[in-house]
Length: 165
Image (cartoon, rainbow, N blue to C red; front, side):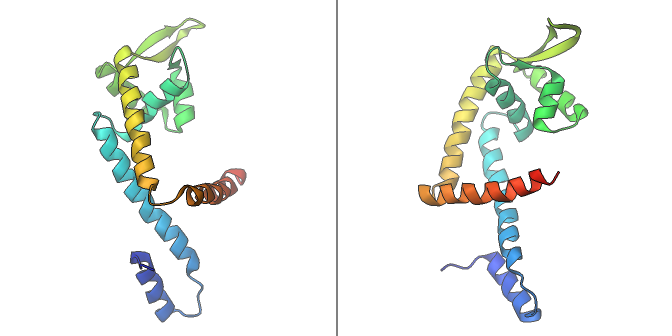
């Protein structure tokens, strides 16, 4: 078995505080380190398309909303769980790049909808394909059965937080 950096930390704690069960540090420490590796690998893929994670999220949310690929700014920031100011900035940047546009909301004359432009649609189609391929590559070290088990375990942890709120 190959040891990692977290094993060394756990060994130090075991030596210094043998009375403590520090095993949760192993799980949470590895998840934290993996999250950073995932963020870098994912951003590297998005950068190939001139996007950052936040911009990808907006385009992907519009794309997966289905035709006509448009949502209100409120629906976008509620879906992405960011502040309205952050969402406005992302939309402004994407609009400047010609990837989205603001259009009047036909059901609310005071409202606006954010819609994918044809350029935005084509870009997100390519970016999401590369993103999924990258995620397959990242997880390829685990056989399918282990990936499925990991999904079950991570879902259990995640829902324990979501159910408590």
